[in-house]
Image (cartoon, rainbow, N blue to C red; front, side, top):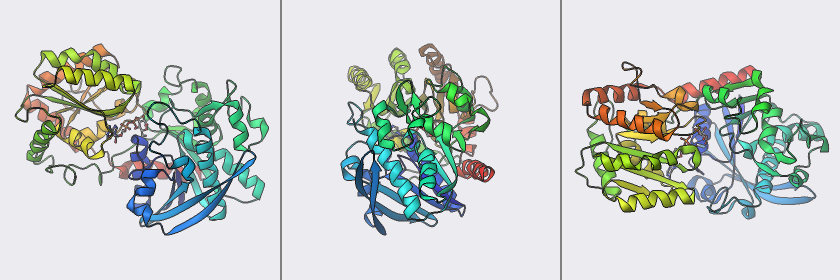
Length: 480
Ligand code: ADP
Ligand code: GLC
């Protein structure tokens, strides 16, 4: 199949969260399975600086209609592996910035224009580059306008650009909600600024367009596919999702085992496997050192890596800070985002430097070390469409502590409830739930034989994208 992937992030060119890992790994897996894959992302600074992009094989000029203006840009094309071409949609004014979506304090004010430009740039390339896509697969709100734009361009130019469009929701909490005047920038027919179109309480809702106008809608876990049809998790779009209930499917993300694999991981001080965990001990010592903690410490290490946002249950951890005072345990947090959460975590780490360590950075290699060197990985999310770190943790022999929401339910089995099959500890999404799970973690750690069983079961799981990509292949074929 000729498959086009369109997303705002793709590892290793631009990453703020799991979207990047998912799009990067899915594109790679499909290419390795023999499909012809073209992946489109914006030409962010980090992407332009990537050595593969620097050696771009082709550069094409781009002209895009945005309302009553014509804006120019450039497309850079390179091929990082067989069957995979990456297209960067560039316009320095929009994308050559430090952050992908904002400056750290707030979102960029021109985000609507930036991502409408991006989508229209993709449509122009589909048209002029004559890509003849079987499937155009769009991810999250930044690419959600594409199904509509593709069909509109087909009508206008009397061509076929894509046989089918697929839209995947990675996080319904971010919908691309903009003032009504934004609609003019899309150049779509006026009747789409309507309740049956992309209008949402007098605003423009880009994600709504993806949900209503793609041929198939998917999300990133079976549990989340159910959850987003309810008011509790649907973030106001549950009614819209319900209208597509027959077409919505939850396909679990996987782990890119070329990137996340303790037996091969080049950024770790030592490598290890389920059969020989000696290297994990060395990672542990290195992790303690890197975070300024006593390297001789033998008790349980609780690690966290995440965007600091309400979604990730940071406040449940802060409420349980006492736990780390009372017990001989360590808490190591790597994460950036919400300034208030950064301050609170920093305060805690400053007050208890021998027990709690915090690094407010985005640091890809360090995230691998936290996964490898910890005994438990703490992920008490309030909601979690899929979640990748709980899978990485299992692959790295680090027992996950997760709340029972979204993809966490589909990927972690509670060892207290299921002593012979458990791979982690699960709890309700609350501070009290987490307290109980942390307590159970201490007990598990104090019983090394039991801990080893849970750890080994996690390491034996096959979370690879080989499995995950097959689900998408079947979906594409079915749609076609
Ligand atoms: P989400 O996409 O909601 O952030 P996921 O669990 O799907 O959650 O994926 C998060 C990804 O981002 C993981 O690869 C994780 O390791 C990475 N990540 C999050 N915060 C950081 C950070 N501060 N430094 C490095 N990697 C991070
Ligand atoms: C989103 C979700 C996360 C998911 C990731 C990749 O960022 O928050 O749960 O794993 O997308 O699909």
